[in-house]
Image (tube, rainbow, N blue to C red):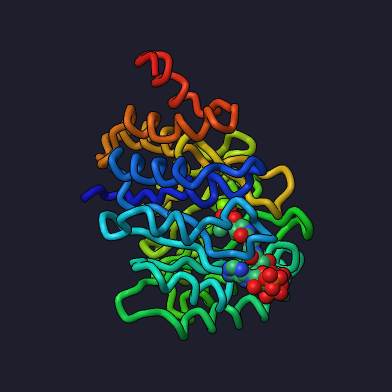
Length: 297
Ligand code: HMG
Ligand code: MG
C-alpha cells in the first residue's frame, strides 16, 4: 500500500467541462484502463442535473458498464435526487461538495451556502452503512466571483463537513490560483484544528503551480492528492479554470521522491489517449508528452 493516496478524478472532473459529448464506451474504456494502470481510487462520474452538466448525463450507463467492485469507486452527488439515482449501483464512496463562497454555491448548485449544507444532510440520510462519504470544499484559495476568501470561511467549511460525517475533506483550488505560500498558510491553520491525515488537496493546474502546491502540502503532512489523467479537467461554473493537476506529473514527482505508487505510467498515458484523440487535444502534462515521445505512443 502506497503511503500517498491518489484519487483519480479524470472521468468526472476531467470530462465534465468538455462541451463535445464523449461517447459512453470511451468513458468506460477510460475508467477500465485507469484501473488497469494501477489507479485504486477513481471518481467515475457525477449524478448531477443533465441541464447543468450535459457531459455527465450518461452517468447511469457509465456505471452499468463497469465493474465498480474492482476498485474504490466514488461518485459526485449534489442533492437528494442524485443520491437516489446512484442507488442502482454499488459505490464504496459518495462525494458531496460545497464551497467557501456564497456566490459560487449559487452559480455551481443554484442554492445558498446554508442550502448546500442542507442538501448534504439529506444525502447523508440516504448513505448505506458500508458507504464512506468524502467532502469537497471548493474555492479554498479564492473564488472567481467573490475574490479572496478568509481562512475562517475555510475552517468553517471543513468543520461542517467533518461534523456531518465526512471521513475525508478535499480542499479545492477550483481555479488553480493557489501557490506554495498560500498552501502553507492555509495548512498551518488547518493543522491547528484537524487531523492532517484526513485532508486531501485538489489542485487545478491553471498556472502550472500544481506540483509546487503538492510539494508544499506534502511537506505539511498531506498524503492524499486528487489528480486527473493527462491533466484533463475544469469546473463548468469556474470560468478560466483549467485541468486538474495531471496524474502523470504527480506520479513522476512521487517516483522522484522514492514514494512508491501502484501506477504504471505508460499504461496511465495510454488510458487517456482515446479521450484526447476524440477531443482533438493533447495533454498539457510534460510527463505525459515525454512518455508519448519516448514510447512512440
Ligand atoms: P436546479 O436547476 O436548481 O435543480 O439545479 P432542480 O432540482 O430545480 O431540477 C432541475 C432539473 O434537473 C429537473 O429536471 C431535475 O429532475 C433535474 P426537469 O424536471 O427540468 O427535467 N435534476 C437532476 N437530474 C439528475 N441528477 C440530479 C438532478 N438534480 C436535479 N442529481 C443542481 C440544482 C444542484 C441539481 C444543479 O445545479 C447541478 O446539478 N449542479 C452541479 C454542477 C456541477 O456538477 N458542477 C461541477 C462539479 S463541482 C466541481 O467541479 C468542484 C470540485 O471538482 C472541487 C474543486 O475543484 O474545487 C468538486
Ligand atoms: Mg475540481
